[in-house]
Image (cartoon, rainbow, N blue to C red):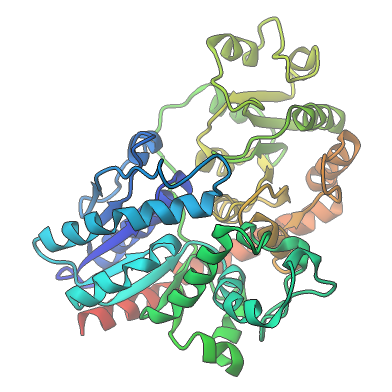
Length: 469
């Protein structure tokens, strides 16, 4: 443990499970390994319960405290067409007075402020209190390079990015295909695009960028941040790959029916299917996925979310455990026919515990970065099925650069035959074994980097040393 017990760091989290999880994981890493006191400032919304109540994620270290800021109400600023990125930016912007008041009232005052991607407008607050400021981007370096270079692309490229005939070039990095751009870049006339450009301009004004990645995973892009003259002229601040940071496995959790079922399956024989907390498929796609899993003849655990995002009633729990009847969005008789090889979980699952089970041999995922890291650090290769946000660029990276994933070729609805073929290839084929070995190799290098004295650990210590001085 490092001797940083005199440090107090505030970390700002924007609303949403996918944002709070990596912030809490970072906070616990700082507390457990570096002995830093951490206060998590959580922006909350007036229209939904606080994310900390939804998440049910325990604090793993006594030095970490969550401070829920007063809820903000942006209902007068948005309508049904307002995109998610715009809504998040508006919520954090509305919370700026609460953020400032919270920091002013802290005793002791924090010696540094870490913010996530949506918190870059806190620059004046950090300046007022004269404290170092860092952006924590819980994603990969390639996405970060696209974000900070997008203001340059905005000046160089005319028309919509998705209509460009050639990939978008980022100095020193792999080009980004137009079809893989992140959601804010899909429409240059939408407000979320202007918010994204603003964030890209503000990030280089911080003292450093923390990435939830590591050197062995993205050597080319990280080298560009250090050595490429053009990219360095845009981002003069240091970039710190301090990952992979992910939720720990709950070793003392009581064994449930799912874990008991997994205990009875052969090693690496089960594919885990989950599209995250926000991943909802159409009714047609759910039907095709169900048929694809059945036709693959592979064991599976499937976290099912209804197509209407509605609640799953108690009848579904009975159905999922093998009683009569099948929900109308699944093929007739599906549960009966797959009873011996499949296990359905309604809505939510203990993802880290499932991925770490020795019976799991593959992960069909929307490839959000939290899920991606949890898969890699569990030695599990993937079938990537991007839905929104930055997931398309994640998918391309995982297939073409990291070499740990397969991807459907269909751009709209993925049909049952392709799903069955991909699942068999991942779980039984030689290509799947190659991907599995690559995942194990990356996990081994990640573990080495996180150990005391490893590259990721050293970079975190370097940041804290700068803050201390």
